[in-house]
Length: 231
Image (cartoon, rainbow, N blue to C red; front, top):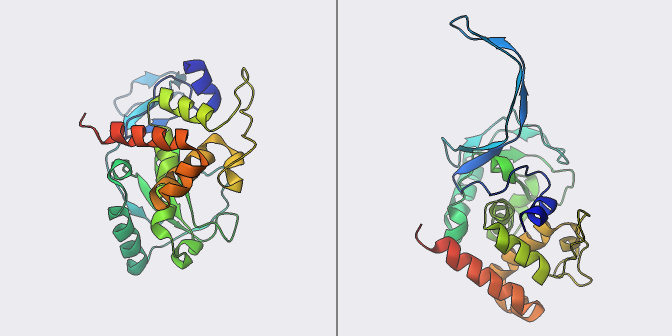
């Protein structure tokens, strides 16, 4: 099962997810350097690992992160925009609210003028685009984006079970084949998008999800029960 999990989330290079208050740090090549005390450190590879967050839900006007597949210009927050985001983050379901964010950034567009937001799961970063503030379903959007983050932190067995119950076909080390029937068109893009869409609909229109796929509906109920249980 761990092998299948690595196929689903090929960016992970070790078994076991990071916790809700941790971020994933990729394997890095460290160049040789000299410490302040004169000690010489040889070039070496630093293994991938989870690092505990030191600050939560921090609004930033700039970032050093490099984004793959997201074309946006980061700009400054206004006080009004921050208040809108803060108010809606407080309304998140309790199981998603525990996934604290390292950075909340304000982008202009995300490569698509209709894209309201994006999440970077491994660094627990949320990017809010112009379209978000025009959307009537702001809470649904945040639930969707936090679900992308949650998927990389939940029990891998549940992630795999969701994948199979949703109809994805897993064949060896190949890219998962999407179901013939999906709840939203872009659900066919990836398991992560399908998961985020189903979580969003579970909270906004549970009857719709129950009718579409009772099995994933009940699995999500089980997931939330586990996530809300005292640790």
